[in-house]
Length: 343
Image 1 (cartoon, rainbow, N blue to C red):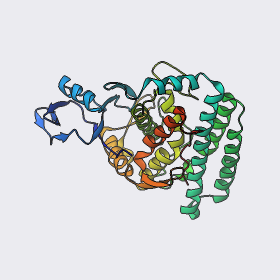
Image 2: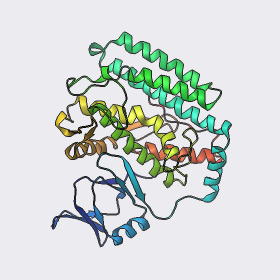
Image 3: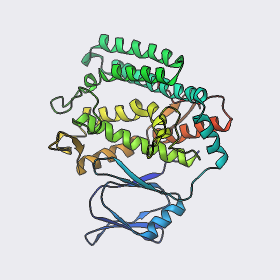
Image 4: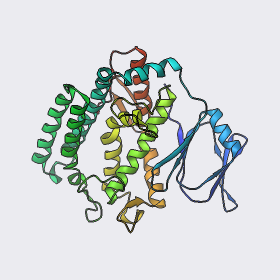
């Protein structure tokens, strides 16, 4: 099993990254910061118009360190990597499954069942931990609905039906999302999911967390030899990481949503950490992104038990482990893809 490697986030503008021996030297307006060793990095994510020397780009490509370029609003722009990992036989089998509606549906069912199951687990945990502060009868009704939705998803006869079940379950889950926000209610509220652009602070946090997690899934899918652009539920579209979007479904509630709720309810993030645009769009500010990633890196080291492997692991390992299990299923070592179920 591989260990968790660190991610270097470049958040401030006008940064200059260069290579010096086996370290990254970062400078800004002539001022140099502490060099960062390359050996324990797995990727560099920049949210600014940073300059990166060709020597550093070449070293990262050779060392398997991914360079990811994001807009200041958190949208994916580009990724620079070295030689494609894995083998052609694994990817050819992935493409065959993607072209087979029956086999694609079987994998998609497992991903969506896990998404709904994990969403229900978040509601159940909320009832256990905060019963006096929420309407438990309301949460219980939503939980029962999601439990039934899991069964429906398992028996969905086709992809369109599965998508319909997933959409209805998401609507029910998000109908009580605002109730799970227990602090700073005047500034952090959730009425409906808004994406492009996010129209309130909670949606801004959710979109940012989903984008970061999708990138994690894409990186780890490539690490085990799969093509993150060819999915089973999400259809092919130029530039869309469809397989990463398939995989991120099971992580949305347990990694992203719970993290966002914790940031708000523990007052780690504040209203002033957002930029409010004239068109109504809301994005994390530079300081907001810094706070986000400070806590994001910490939560990657929290331990949990994987129900399929029956062993403890750090939360940040989940995308890699699930990518590995998916690769094993595609290779024929497993009968089906075992998604992560949070209990």
